[in-house]
Image (cartoon, rainbow, N blue to C red; front, side, top):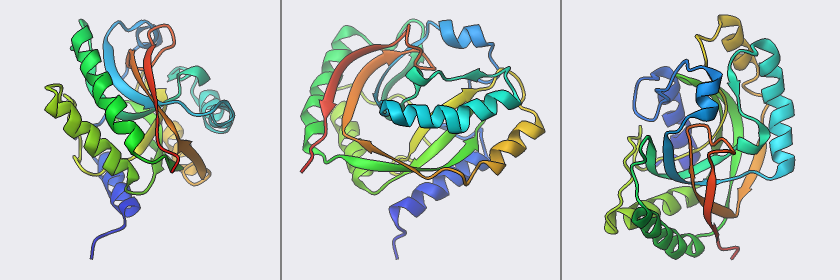
Length: 233
C-alpha cells in the first residue's frame, strides 16, 4: 500500500537529519556573519514569501528565542524568510546562468504555474541540519505535481535544475531560520529538540516568485524578476 505523501515527506526529512552529508544538506557550514550578508555568489530560483503576520510569528516564536540562547550565529531577518519551491541554478560567483537562461525560466514558470492549484504547507517541526536550523512544512501531492512539471519544463528548454536532492520525487517545505557560524553547542541543539513540537502553522502558497539572490536571500542581493499566481480553482 502506498504511503500518504506527508508520511513520505517525513521519512525523507528523517533521513536528511540523521545523515547531514547526503545531497540537499547545507554544505556551507560555519561561515562568519558578514560573509553570509555580503556573499556575492548568486542563485536563480523560485520562492514563495510568507505573509507579514506569518513572518512576525516565526520571528517571535522561534528566531528570537534561539538568538537569546546563542547570538553568535547568523539569524535571518524577517524580510529574508522564504520558502524555496524549485531551484534552477545554485549559488556561484560568477553566476551559473545568463540573461537568456532567465528568459527561459520565465517562459517555463509563466506557462506551468497558473495551471496548478494553490496549496498549503503545515509547518510542524524545527530541525538542525549540517549548517543551519530550519522549520519543515508538509503538504499533499499538489507540490509534487507542481515541482515535477516545472522540472520537466526546465529540462525541455535546456535549463535543468543543477542541484542534487535526497529524493527526486518527494518534496517538502523549508524555511531557514539560522545559519551556523561555529559548531552549535549541545545546549543549543537540546533547546531545538525541545522546541520541536511547539509549531503547527499553516502557510498557503498562492504566488511564486522568480528571483536571484545570495545563499541567505539577503535583501541587498535579491532581485524579484517575475511573480506568478497559482490557480484558485
